[in-house]
Length: 206
Image 1 (cartoon, rainbow, N blue to C red):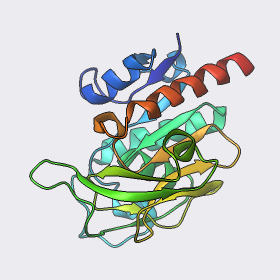
Image 2: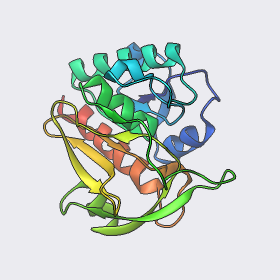
Image 3: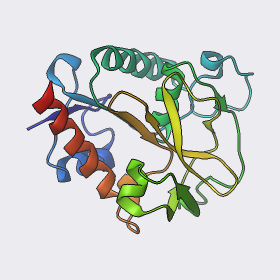
Image 4: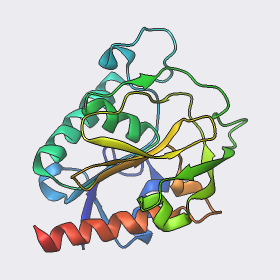
């Protein structure tokens, strides 16, 4: 069984833990024991890490930034699979030299309930293979990827052009700006199932 590194103390991210377990994956907390990395959602990346002005960031955790960026760099160097979700996609972009939009409107959760909006996906992308080229997603963020990091390409967008998913051109590395672990329609579990399949493929071929 493949083991996924989920940063943080056990039980901190129960939605992600359940999604990984449903995908037939085990969860680890140390690089040397893990085959792939899942970067979960959360607060904003510290603005200084992408050269942005201070003042708009929410819930910054400098220690978490440092840990997740270091883990991302290590997994990238090893060529191991990585999936970034919401904040995790932003961490991945930051690790590869990208920048972030510090605030956007219309994508936040309201009273703890995710927003929902349409999206379009590039034919042949992971998102399009799972859900087609046009489908509704959930949304709970106020920052987003701006300039893509090295080797990344955008493959899914909101109606106003916010990047909702990105993929690395050569590595088994990708991210979604939305929250599949709590999306029922369409079935967000398919994202984690596909991640599991890619990790198993990586292990067979390495």
